[in-house]
Image (cartoon, rainbow, N blue to C red; front, side, top):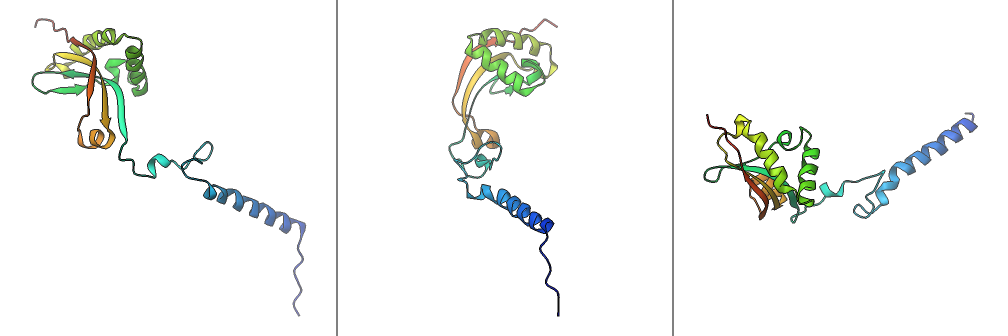
Length: 156
């Protein structure tokens, strides 16, 4: 005959802790993935569902040249190498009514950068683009110019 194993306090405590941990791990499964998205547990619903109407509405700085030539000005010529700081610099300039000042400052910086030799104008622009069209296909939506200024060129 086989002996019946005794339930020890250690085994009982281990079982209780294991059940509690399993319940804690499984708990988020009962939440609504949209309304239940919050700190510290996030399901990132913005990536879980198709968003056909997703838009990119943002202020930015571009240079333009002959014909349809245009290029976005890199962050280091707007503020510094940090993208978010450059974005905030543009946003604050537009909101405070100083877009023309920012435009002139950026034009001065681009005039010394060989990458922009073929361009003649800097513009601070607001664009409202369909996200996928703009970021994947390069199709621009409506744009509104806050400020436009020439790139100063020294005679060579």
